[in-house]
Image (cartoon, rainbow, N blue to C red; front, side):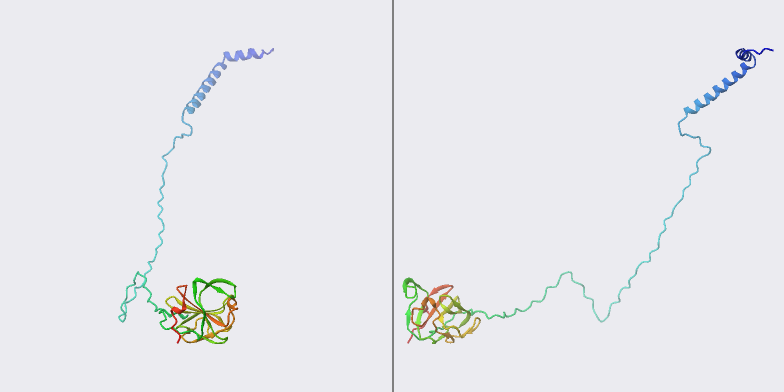
Length: 248
C-alpha cells in the first residue's frame, strides 16, 4: 500500500481529532499568558503574606552596678582646742627691722670745726677767675686750690671730721686723698708721699694725720715741696681760705 505524502497526512489529522487538540493547546497558551500578564501587573517585591508578622519586643534592662558611697567619718571636735576658721586672705608678713648697712656712711652733718692741714706759707692762692702763671707748664691757667709750702715728709692732717672716700694715684697731681665732711663738702690733699696713712672708708677727725708731703705731683714739679689742698662744695671748687681759721 502506497503511503500518503506528509502534507496530506497533516491535513487529514487537522480535519479529525487534531483540530480539537490544537484548540486545547491554544486555550492553555492563552490561559498561561493571562496568568503571567496578571502577575506582571502587581508591584515588584510585593508578596502576599501568608500570616501576619509577629513582632517580638525584647526589653533590655541596663545593668546597674551598685556603688557603695564613700563615707568619711567626721572628726570629733577636741574639747581642749577651739577650731580657728581659715582665712581666705594671705597674712601680711611681720615687718623686719631695718638692718644697719655694713659700709660706713658719710657724715650727714656739715663739719663745723676746721684746722690747717700743716703749718706753712701759702705760695699759690686759689684762683678760678684770674689766670696764674704755672712754672711747670710754662703757661697761664687757673688754680683750683692753694699750695702750702713744707719740707718733704711733713705730716699732713685732716682739716675736719669726715670719712676717707678715696686714695688714688693721679697722673698729674700724684698721690691724692679725698675726705667727705657732709653737707656736700669734701677736701682733697695732693702731692703727698707715695704711701698715705689712711685707706678708703676710714673715719678721721680734724687734726688726724692722713699722710705726709711728697713730690709726686708731675703738674707742679717745678715748685718747691708743698701740699696742694682743695675744697669742693657740691662738686664745685671753693676757696679753702674761706673755711680755714686764721694762722696765728
